[in-house]
Length: 604
Ligand SMILES: [Fe+2]
Image 1 (cartoon, protein in one colour):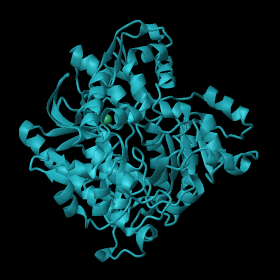
Image 2: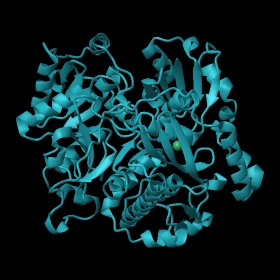
Image 3: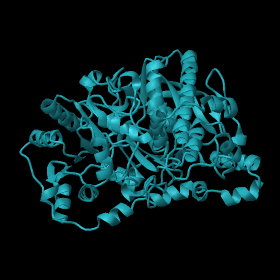
Image 4: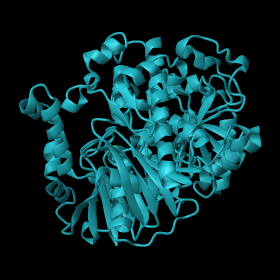
């Protein structure tokens, strides 16, 4: 039984294939089209999922879309009539172009599958899809489930219980009261892009003083003991589909929004710190409520807000649940996976047995390229590559380069599903070097950033470096670095300058508040990456590497060997690993077009 899940026409379109309940393939459209957050019908991702399983479209038994377009249309229509100053005419003008396509979804899906699929097209609700993506792949036979995001049809947050193959959602919060939209409003107000800048706002928070927290809770958010809340719509404009924030919001925080090209000031840092506090408080309250109502020891999380790994870290340390499992593709891309799983388990009632590790397979569910494809790309570029008698010889060579302070692009195995690079499409470097954070940013990403990189650490040695160390295979939990904060917390420097004065054992991956976004690496999920870390640790005593996604700023993570080679050549990366080949920069023929390459991606 082959089930294809699709998410599309909002942001982060994706496709996922589930065969007899097993996750076989999942990929986001942006990787193929090279358009970040591509929201078009995921034709290339669908095509690849089918090819990966060797299936024609006609062999699919069901296609499941991740939300219900008519209910969503009703929500947009109703809220426009209620909130838009111009009522229905304003709604028509503001009606997003995707809505047209969404209303004709069966036709769009039919077209996207080339007219070769005649089976049923089914729909899960948006939060059913998120909940399914959070629970079914988790290692738990039973768990509480919490979904938190911007908005789907009407729901903005739901909680429920997963048991075996069944999920029951118990309560919901409804639009326009939304944690995701609240966070997005502050993201936009601080001059970052909605749907990609939320991560930056979270990264900015440690620089700020949460002096607006009380103002937000007094004026904007009416927060109750059970974590449910009500947002005063006089501060917002999103329900009318116009803007995120109103004049009243701007007056409350001392003036108009920051322009994206303007310098970041203390106000933005303090706003970031304040809204982060509010989000954490809400998440903790909801979690306590859900725990009290369900009595469950385990919690599964999904929805875009579940990518807030600082809140996740606090939830694990201070919250009532013993264990957390968070869907790595927590945003809408993961809805494709959830929709397919919801059909197999929830609707068809097939039995489910939780796998001890989890069923997400390290989230290494995307396209892979074999030696032949890699050698073909190398030949096509006239590139010079070294081969090794064994994989371990290659791994040792990579570790030697890293230990010598070189920056290595590592492209191997299947691509990650979800926004984080987990080793297979990663740029790796020695995290102990004091200047590595700046070097990686300026020489590779072409940006100056106030954010550190993430540490990848051998699972068994995480507790030597991080407090409350726990399994964090998908880089979704922030934890304090042991010795990462200067004694007495006397941080040097002002503003984002402070990142240069971070101390501790791994400064390139330590934030100004002494925290880090940890990825634990085990041999079961990713044997190659585990071997590289192990070889690096044998040389240096340090089982940690800095891990950042393989791309420049604004570029989707590299998809094929040609993307990887180009990114390698047009940046100051020293070494490139393509599968089982190793390429050194000085050995490569000159290549033109660096400036055009950098210009081709809009900074985000
Ligand atoms: Fe969502």
